[in-house]
Image (cartoon, rainbow, N blue to C red; front, side, top):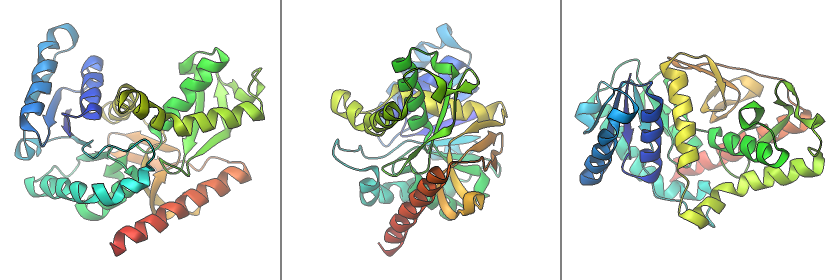
Length: 309
């Protein structure tokens, strides 16, 4: 499988590249960036470590060379400021994103290619990609709340001294201010997480608030997220490459689950070789469903503002 990372010279793109290289699942990684020298440097640095990691083709390229990609990962975008909402980025990033979509489409792309949007605000940009590219909606996905979910699980595991890979708890909705935690189905090792000592209602509120603020905290301390988002990107790409049929909280165009349509956000989603295989409408507590509907409304309101702009 060939993967092209657009914005691969940046922190998120380069971290995604090393995660994909370390796993050795995809066969080809192409780095694209507006700064061609930076893209070449990142590709060369990765190439130098190839003999230690995996047998892959790794190089810098352009849109013409990317035309036969199986997955386009779009990470290019302006950074979010510590006090800035992800949705506040929209007016600064839509123009750049539109240029990238035009370049992908103009260069030609395979009928079964997957476009994987990571740039923020991811839910809005995923919707724009579906509208512009003309691909089946299943083939356009956004990172959605994958990173939020990873942070949520890891913080819970760290606090309660549990194995991180055994904690299963989802964040759904918008990747942003209106995201919601799903405690109704949260488990550890297959057992209800709420039954673990220390995981009471007060702790649940605290850890969710920490999760929501995690992005801003990382930005303030090191300038921007990288490793965790790279791992989240790689997990999604591997679900596609290996046709895992894995349940992931990626963002995609809604087709009726929970009564939602014409909005991109994260619901429980089965991901495989063709992108979105289906949405799963798992039972939610009434307050969770209400929060999900409110999240969709917030995104639709923002989308209308984009259309007017």
